[in-house]
Image (cartoon, rainbow, N blue to C red; front, side, top):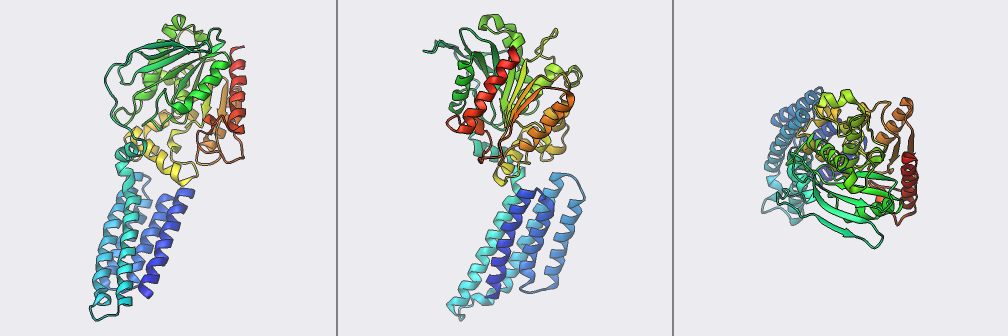
Length: 436
């Protein structure tokens, strides 16, 4: 029973270490411990020289990688270590053949087979743990159902709803990128306009998603027009395609403001999740001339025209920290989205991630802001840090970061809950304050 007991203990150690690495984000350090434990599973059975050399090479490779501050180098070291582990498992199986001898009792055969199965489980999970970042494009596509965007032109459709709102859908705005459509919801007597950019981790989402409609209807009922924007998705189009295209959409809305009944001086830019990042960066482009110049983008708002406000719902405000949410599942998903968007396993140290950070480039000219975020698996710490920066800059900021009940990412769209209903009331009050 010693063999199987050793493996069971190390299986549990693997899962415990993986969980810790997700929660505390000490990926490489915990991974070193995982691989060393796995190597030890073979060494506990028989400590031949070959096994000792292989185990030592595992430790050296991973410790050396820990000294290099590049995620890709660390992952490659992990993959090499997985290959070494596989050799250790083969050696272990070879040394355990007697356990499966025909003359051995069935109980001992079962122990040997179970040990091999557990070895395989450890290896497969550990391999997945290291391979995942290198398969980000495919994994993100599978997780979100993303498919190649259709190049087929859409037909503009106009309807007037029972509440008097005129909806002009699938308007094509000029852009060099694909999926360049927007929908304008126009109220009869509008006070201002919400320019809304959907989320979806840069790889999915749509201006016409059903979950967005209730909150759009609340903004409309409060007397605000809404412009909902589609944009090109990754991996077919990567950074800075999305923010560039949304700037194109904003320019189109301003150029045609009279046709839509929009006052261009009363536009509040808004987004959720990755859309919050795009919306925030778009706002920085309109309010920070040097920043726009450094990106080679001509801001949509010219001649002193500026956004009337900015609203973020669980927005990604520090792009480098895309995979830091404090919750394992969202860490994995958002980290993959960051890799896909910037086409770099080391996206956190990529110049594009720093350039796209809303937090890093906001100035005292940033408009009045409303921030909301949840308390589990989301970007709350970034929201609070951005709140503090805006206060230090003298920018008016209203925030809603509830500590209870448990609120996950993009909880703001759940208007049938007390928290969601209260938040949209806060948004409406903020919108009115922006256009007074």
